[in-house]
Image (cartoon, rainbow, N blue to C red; front, side):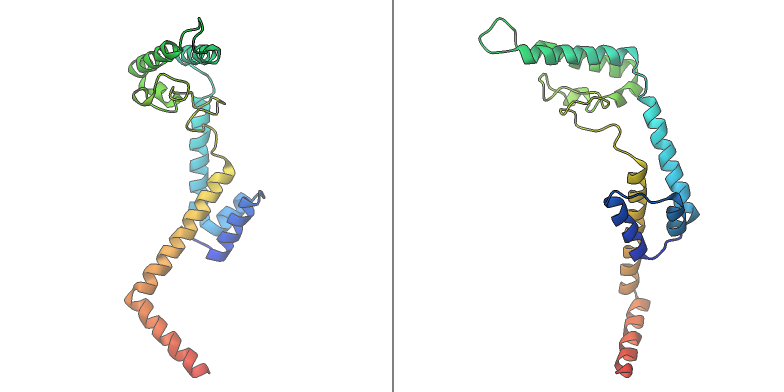
Length: 188
């Protein structure tokens, strides 16, 4: 991949961090055609991932309804009242999640945690990654065009820094430092 200088890349990252847009032309100019192709590849993958989550399969709808029912029971629960502790509701959710995972392994991507990590309570139950609940562990739609651009630019800066460090520690780098020091001394 062709890289522009580190300072230009850092300015583009700062621009993104400040909420401003950078164009694909900036990506291509600073990262080359390989960088642009990598951007397109990552964005296509993200669009395919989003398309997967567009329509909830029936089993996932059933699970979601069961979690909502368990959450409702949890909100109603108060000790020393006629309402039972919602543990049994959450356990049904865990059982259904295990059944779903056995039925179709691809559907496991819908959950923010595996069934063996889930516990039968409001904080420990697996949530759908498309859920708006604050209790879910992961976010389904956090990848944006800007995050992809930022990732590519950050990787390019890291690579430039690693190459500069490797060169400065190499024999050629040491020789170059010595020559530079001699030139600076003569220039004074």
